[in-house]
Length: 305
Image 1 (cartoon, rainbow, N blue to C red):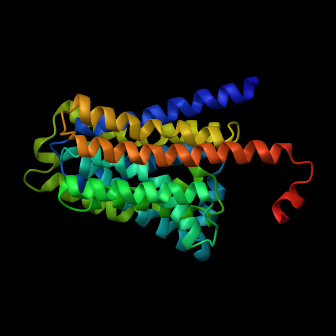
Image 2: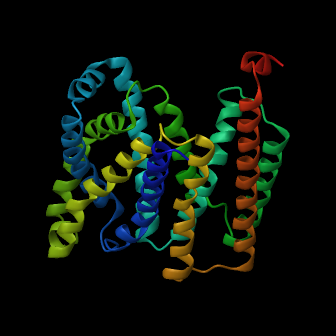
């Protein structure tokens, strides 16, 4: 592996490790409501991201995108999906449902695959059909185990998958795009923060000195892994970047089960294991197709065939 690729892999591993470890970060703030925490996260992220965008010389790009009505429409839609994702994730963490977040992020790439078929008209290969069958089997087992369909996991994985779909329509890089998205959320976030400071039992009422440090750090923990990912994405093949991304739900799974003592029945373990098999099937096919494409002297002919 050349030095550029090694640098990208290091950045990717650190980025995904940070994203996975955010579970422990939010757990430290579990005395606050998820709505309050998201309000503070948006405001802190706006400050950090605008400073980052300015340092990169991209201020004009973000301002132009926000002013463009056609781009702003997709920024608003992406922001709405981001709020659903963040709120679901943080709400699950502070309410002691870490394992369900792990399942959600295991399902996210498989939901993305479904969107590709249903929305974008992509074709399912035999291996991906197998993956879908495995997912349906897993969800059936987990539904029986939980006594209901794991809606939280679907909301988390689905919001992230659709967020990725909408981001395809935003003509900005990942950092610039996120800056535009959180900026559109700023007015609502300000209202949420003001309420959290004034109501009984809110942040202003019960936060300790350490809590204030953590709340201020929410912007940094939002931006840091994204910056690392932006460095990694153009340097690492997606056939490698995808499996590295499984670090996030694996870390969440281990934290929920081993660190926070959430119930892991045999049925639930089997359900998770079947999802892992589905992801492995997709990963194997992706790697094999990537290798085959590199051996084809005329890619256009290969596509046509």
